[in-house]
Amino acid sequence: MSGTVGLVLVSHSPDLAAGLRDLLRQVAGDAVAVTVAGGDDDGGLGTSYELIRDAIAEAGSGEGVVVLPDLGSSVLTAKALLEQHPDPKVRLVDAPFVEGAVAAAVIAATGADLDAVVDAAEEAWHARKL
Amino acid sequence: MPESSETTVVLPAHLHARPAGQVVVTAAKFTSAVEIVYGAKTANARGVLALLALGATAGETVTVRATGPDAPQAAEAVATALRTTA
Image 1: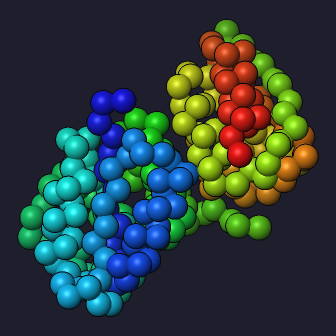
Image 2 (image 1 turned 180 degrees about the vertical axis):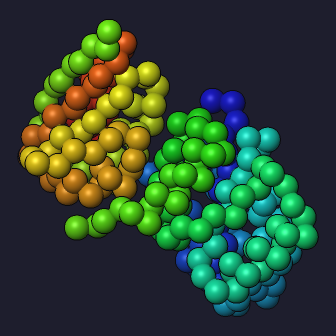
């Protein structure tokens, strides 16, 4: 498959981001580029502008990148970065972190375009577990 | 005229995250719309979260329903994914 939409997981916790990436690999396979920006610059709990910027660059394939933040400063930092460096192919998406990432990764694995991957992540708000 | 095709599968394993992901990826290779029916619930095969929410467990029977020009092939491919993905 030539080029799928990439995903960037932004979390306060490096472990949380890395664990979610492991889950996405298992559910969606290796075809989708999933990069992580977890923790602060020193590897502690927090958020790093530079790590997010690098993760977006790493995930980019030309098909587009979906950025999924967990909460709080992850959202604010990612938002600030994308406001300073706007790119129509990089989209910050408001979605539940785990469910949105799973839905987005699986749809991205089918070769879906950026709009479809964004929609899949946002639709995760409506997915009931029980 | 859209063709419709159905096949049933006895799940060898719970319809958990990995098989649900395989169903989505497999169904996307066809132009037909594919649904998985379990009891009174129906999930579109494009939505991994909806498939998980079916709560279908090992040993239960689900129906794969495809509608579209390549319905028989789509139904069979998705059924095969369900039978073979643990």
